[in-house]
Image (tube, rainbow, N blue to C red):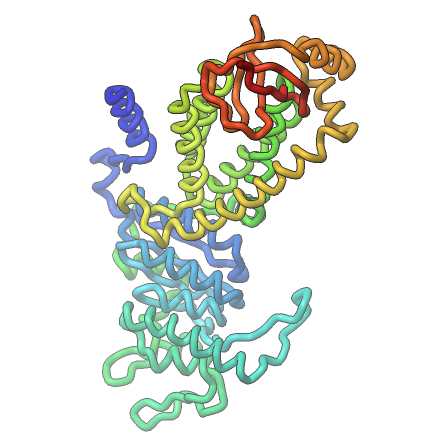
Length: 465
């Protein structure tokens, strides 16, 4: 057992452990270009996460945000800033025409900001979009104060970390502050600060206001930074980021469908539609994690291994407990780890904050699955749908009538419980190994039992002797 476990853990490390880069690939400088060319909305998180992880795996020297955006959601901005903080190399924002609102927040999360001629940055006050995205609503005063305070703290922390002027950032967010430097009024109280490239690079006390300089093109910027001959990798949007967002938004529902489908499959003879639907739901769930850049296909392998162990427990060696228990644990671990955000170079064991969101989703799914399975066990056998499932998926059973006739012929048969009944389990009746359930009694393995009825595909038994 110890040898088998060691081999399994070794394979797992091979799946999830960090991969060393060949020495030849680490010699030249590497620059990764990450486009921020759309509104700051949830699908963009997937693109940024993928780009940052690829840059970290390649040990890139420089990460450039090619910025042109009108802004977007604060929660999405927070997530993007958190992701950018994982990258340990140099970070630069290249403002390509505009970086408004959330775009300004994200720009401050990089170490330096450069701008094209005629570009602008700022106008970062929190706003509320009207329903349907038709425009901007007036922000209630109390809500505006609360939002301004929260956003201000977030952006000030990023500015302080990267050496930007916090007063400049504050003036972009809070119109009540204004900004005066060396006696010069940059923006009056009651107005939100927005800077052109020339205003942003103007120096006060020997330090630029916000921008480190102006560059006509991205190539010119890389030349200025000393990366003209560096290996350049541009992260391209794949078009599946939006799909990944919606898949992960319904991930608890996918888990409920997957668990319910597998449950029905185990409770009906043969293999049919419920099993296909359940497996498809789990496959989509893992695919969503892959698109999101959260996990690779290694956790699918762990999940399948767990499912195989559970199947061995149920159909090949019932009553042994250990394979089924280990299989269930592997399945749960795979479902959680498929949604854990781990970056290259980080410890393979996730921290509590990393586990919080996946565990919350799994908890919702498990509660929903228990309710769904309970309702299905009570309602489904009485519906025409169940008869259709049995008649199409039963192996060796031609129709519902034949199934019912076979069950009726078993009434009164005496067999032996080959697993403890708590109250469900397995019992052997001649050459047949079938699912049984007691009337609430806990019966020990080896107990003689008699069939007295049926509930769906399970035989109801009582103790004999």
